[in-house]
Length: 102
Image (tube, rainbow, N blue to C red):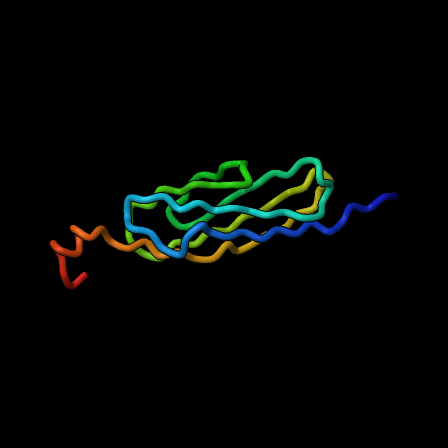
């Protein structure tokens, strides 16, 4: 019986930080598995839903550290998980003017 290569996934953000009210893009890069079809399940801070897509754009309204994880399932049944890292969302500049000690 033919065995497909081991499924691997890595994921990463397109920036290490952003101001509140902006979007961070997350990307998953897959190797191995069947090569035909993959399902993606994203879970992370301030991201309650999951989009079945290799790329993900998340709008962050609240300041703080935000992390993301992805699980990938290949059509041959293999499963791989990855931690995508953490980004920091800074308060708006006008917010810092209103609350300088934030």
